[in-house]
Length: 253
Image (cartoon, rainbow, N blue to C red):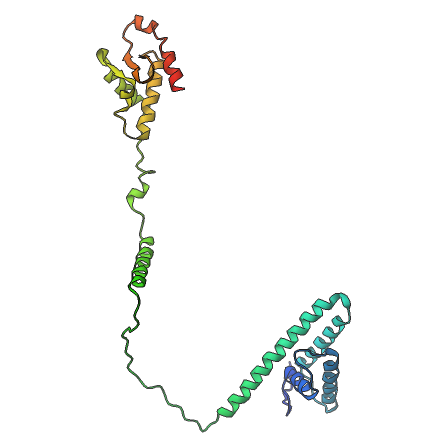
């Protein structure tokens, strides 16, 4: 691939430099660029460069095609918004380039080969914190820092107590327990059955055990409400007199 000829004109360098020069020369408002007028001046400069037998860099030709495209879009009414966006984009690039060129010119005056630079000296800094904060802010900062530290700690064991250490009570164990309490003709008031229960699982298992014993005609519940009495069925006569269990079923329903 042949090396592209690099050149620098005395007035401008690159397509944006050329456009800024034409804008300043023809007193065109950079915030309201007339694309047709700018394209005409730009093409004249390109033709002048060709007449002087200079190789035109691809950047200049790309900018020329870009200006032609913007002008073509502006001629079509239905692409008016697109044309405005293309025009704004070109204006923004020109403004940024103008600022960079101005800064470069100022830096060029400052920089010279006669300047001597020395390395920075080691200076001792006072690292004492001298700012004064209200006590309320210090307390809030401490609480916030402690809270963030606790978030990184593993959860405590009691956090899983409701899941891992959940007590499981079997209905069969409650059936045996209730039968032992009613053995040898003992009687219990209905509410006394649940007085020894610990926790919800214990209550549910005791209630289901009571239903199973009533259904199996092992115990009977006499009376209703707070005065209901629970006792064991020990003979055939008791088994025949289980009609009162219907009252219990109505109560629990």
